[in-house]
Length: 384
Image (cartoon, rainbow, N blue to C red; front, top):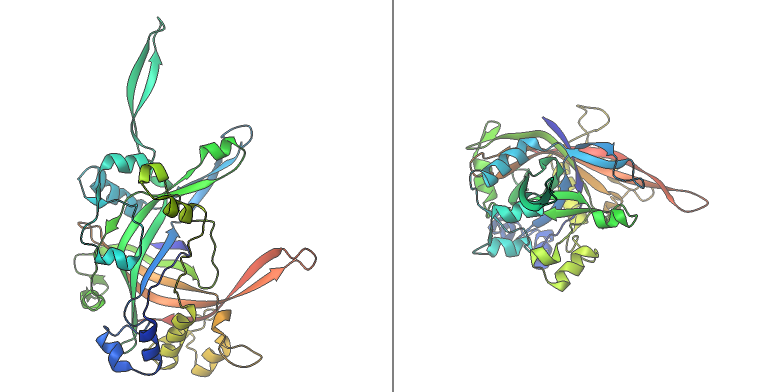
């Protein structure tokens, strides 16, 4: 199943600057002692949000919004089995209101469990009360159960560790935790004439820290032991230099028990999820490994055409000075296969390829307004 997933780019990578310097000076042995991670020696922890594909349709909400957009997210292969285990089989998950780094999550000994009533409340579901009036005008309080609408689960918030092996030439995205995201209209804003959508974390599935080499060795043929295919050919784009703040998560201050500082950071978009992310180094490693023959590069516009080193450099270099302009390579798109363990609900990812894009921004010559962004795929790097 091919799934088109748009990554809403929210990243946080924590790294050792001294380790990076040592690697850039050719300290290969030090890097090998550090588990051989060429991307960022030491630790490479990443956060990002992504969105399931969806279909939209208009619904009548009010005279003001007669055609309000609703979205039905295509997520049933993962979300329905996951919440069946949580709500019906008692699968234990953790409180999603974790505030901190991925590294901090890895080092935690204990996480606070969350019960199904809290999960349902985050999804605007579960038991509620309503009133009924009989023929004599007598008012009675009646309990009502509202089923959760899984089509409103818009995506996942991933906590990952990325591992790039320069010697063998492969990239592993190790999932440490993932959080389903519930999306909904803010009714108070709608009543005030504003269309505002909010996103809320429902729960955390914590996979603990695994080891990339063990994950790699557990693969036999096209699968992993104990895992089955979840999605084939997942396509997800990651902006490297842009920092949009419009799709951040809504944190419920009252129900979630978050601090004022935390609430303000999320709610008013002041937290920089690109903190410490070295996009230039990421591109430099991928391109250099390709030029060294560890990876193979193809022309995205001509399927099957293998690019020579000269052709690669011509595509990624600045025309004027004939040097690679990493800051002019604006995004990458991953092609991945996802696997899931039906018992633990853990997810594994196998990266098949990375396509590097250059963006061209076109503006109105009179108003200066952005008209469009043209994305040109330059090279597609096939991974092992």
